[in-house]
Length: 174
Image 1 (cartoon, rainbow, N blue to C red):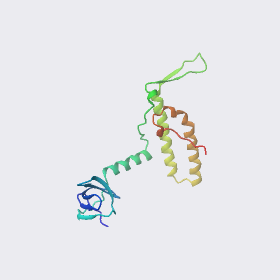
Image 2 (cartoon, one colour):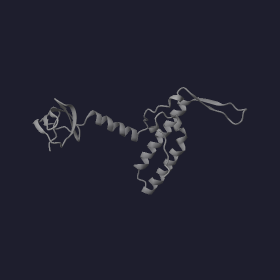
Image 3 (cartoon, rainbow, N blue to C red):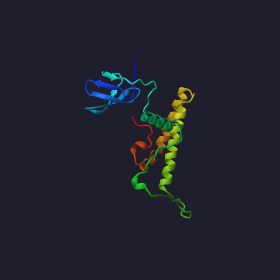
């Protein structure tokens, strides 16, 4: 099957006449005269009115950006932007020693939260490196269990996260 290039004209049984405006590995993005932009499978049933040959393997900018974001997230120390909960913004963390003769320590919660996020991101990178390493399968499982316990130990700090999806999760009870 030849892949149609951008600017190819087609006639679709449901959407009518249209022009291919983008091509991915599985879909054509087609702008139809009567129905606007639609995404159809490459192997859909349609009539080719005017085929434009595209010898270059087409990948959309969105796909490239998405793949790059996934790779950076998975394999680097670059962290995503993780917002602190609104009620904590501008707040301070005060550490008071049990001995009243000693001075307390105060630091901005935002700085503390940033350190927690960095720890989380570095654990994730370590987890990926373990999973892709040459360790024996049982060793990988053992290491993964340690990482799960580390996440569980850090769930105390979940109260600081604005988005629940970015919080720590340990092993779940069954």
